[in-house]
Image (cartoon, helix red, strand yellow):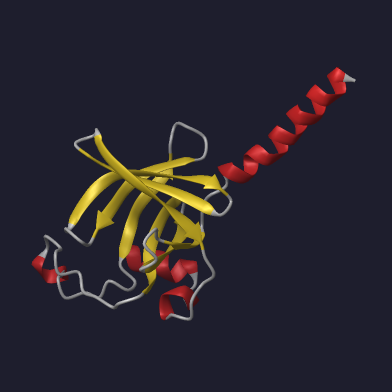
Length: 154
């Protein structure tokens, strides 16, 4: 009996594990509820763009003066996330419009409905938050095909 229990649980774990290794594409509500980020797969790299925001804004803190008037809606915030060495982890960069800085970052699914996003400065000063899977809102970015979003990022 004990043998079959071990086999059952090993099979169950093997069946569940691939679900967490899947790319976390889709809509995610940020921790403070002020924005949604749409994560799309662009030829093997994950990108996240603002698909909804509670209060429309402009990228006023961008270090590039030419981008300071661009709307934050549709702006990329997760940048070129690629599969990392650890299964289920993607590594790349995250852009913080609040201060105009880009940080090294990683993302991973904590569960099918929770995405953990972590950014680091200087490689060791790290902070993160959990985003919740959300339904797409009726915005132009949410309605846009993933291929069109990828084309705009080129």
